Amino acid sequence: MNALIQMIVTRPRPALLVFVILLIAGASTYISIPKEAEPDVAIPTIYVNLFHEGISPEDAERLLLRPMEQELRTIEGLKEMRATAAEGSAVLMLEFDAGFDADQALLDVREQVDLAKAKLPADTEEPLIQEVNVALFPILVVNLHGSVPERALLTLARDLQDKLEGLQGVLSAEIAGDREELLEIIIEPDRLESYNLNYAELLDSLSRNNRLVAAGALDSGLGRFSVKVPGVIEGYEDLLALPVKTDGQRVVTFNDVATVRRTFKDPEGYARLDGERTIGLEISKRIGANIVEVVDRVRQTVAAEQVNWPQAIEVTFTQDTSEDVRTMLSDLQNNVLTAVLLVMIVVLAALGLRSAALVGLAIPGSFLSGILIIGLLGFSINIVVLFSLIMAVGMLVDGAIVVVEQAERNLAGGEGRKQAYIHAAQRMAWPI
Image (tube, rainbow, N blue to C red):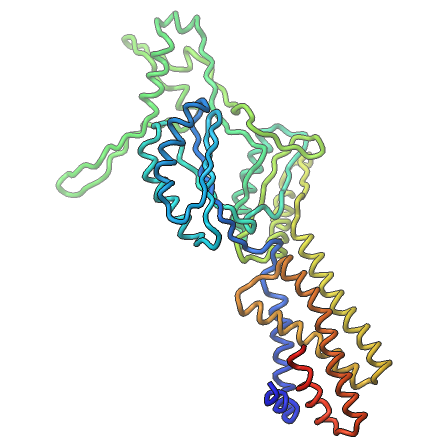
């Protein structure tokens, strides 16, 4: 350390060049480094969600949870497993030991879930595996509301979802407050009886004509081509024209015995803004993306799309976590500037212009060098880092003042300027 201090003071030009490079590189890193609200902390918890429509809690425990528990309990590093059964669903919470490998744990869970799927009922939906990561929580909610039909609002929200998920830095835009669309079939009993049909025949006809058939391929000797059997109902018109019975030349279709209309499932949740029905898009960013830039892109995209929407549709942004980051960045900049100005004023009054200038350069130089190291290590600027940097400003002030004050004392004792600052820096380097 003493040799380094001696070399810096005796060779000022290379030292000043390095100092200027550090200032420029640090300032550039501060502008470009990713800025996040929360640090990327790996929480040792993974959830496995199982869905089976209409199943009772007792059956969910017996048919869904037990087969899954038998496979998952063999995972290495699993600390605790808790399960909850409810009507139509079940969930398992897997807690791992501290210091676990998040990627390996997620891979192990997926492998065991794939093995357990063979033991689940046939109508059970695909298991949903979710890891807990605070960095993936929504950073912004885009709320669409207004005096327009629900279907129109939902259509605009889904179009906007596709555009937002295509933006750089956006991981997902989940829709909240929507309902799944379906076709509702209202059977007319009188018509059904007049055609000598019953409900079982209708349901059987629907299930047989809405099935994916692997038709294989044909080899003509000159080439091979696949065969497609159009066995899936794709639209409203396909269902209306679906034949349910033939009598000579007469074909009875669904349109003859039933009324089909588009509707929604019963709501399982609600989204409200100031008591008004709304549809929200919860924006999550990719890990390492700049939260300020991502939010700005989202707002610009929404503003560009809103121009083509009806005037009755309003857009409100809520839960904007970039505001906290902007506030912390502003506080950090204000604290650094305030510290530099106040310290320079005090040192200028007590020790003179030269000492004040040295202190004023040392504080931003140390601060930007720290930012440069944070960027080189691959870290992001988040609330924890910002709070730490704000606290570190006080230590930077103390360190600069202590060295300069010691140098001034050495000058007063008769030492030359170079020797005075060399001895002051060498004496105070390790304590600082």
